[in-house]
Image (cartoon, rainbow, N blue to C red; front, side):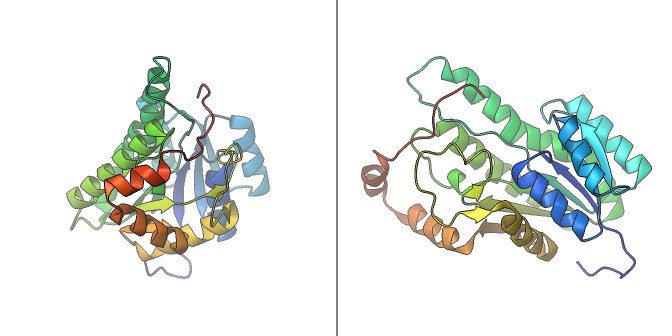
Length: 260
């Protein structure tokens, strides 16, 4: 994306109140962007706005609520204009096991946030971006969506669905001027990963991950794994025959089971 020196980038980010979403918001704000920060915790969004006065538009909204997302999008477009970048970052992750009936509700909620939440984030902006013939839709998926991980059936399946959805959307928008970028992070130091009771190779701090993602977004790269070392690992895992993959990961440690 080649931009005029006086151009002010307009960015929408969900899940902006903590973790990677906060880091992404801070990265773009430090670059002079105007940011629509969307999350369920308004007090944290106001703290972000206080750090960057005049550059943050705060929206208390749940990505599962289509009406709330449409209202936030309409308000931002009316006040600022069509965004240049929309980042569907909001997501949840908890351990699940297929043998427990009570985990079915957790499966449903994880899919509601990680998949349908992404759909509801993008939908209000697509027509505006088509009309403008420009813009980038960014979905934060995960390397966990590339192969199913034990104890993470809901999370892995939701991220696999997100990857497929983003690919479908990219093809739908081909030739429109609107780019679709799929980012699959490895491990990032956030509250979501802080509960993991196992080693996390190639762990990135959130601010470093945000900076790397911003470079991918700037290039409008269709699909990227961050960091690149995890990309190599994921390629290897995808090539493993099922019998070998099963044997290696059958006793892998699990993320704790708890309500979302």
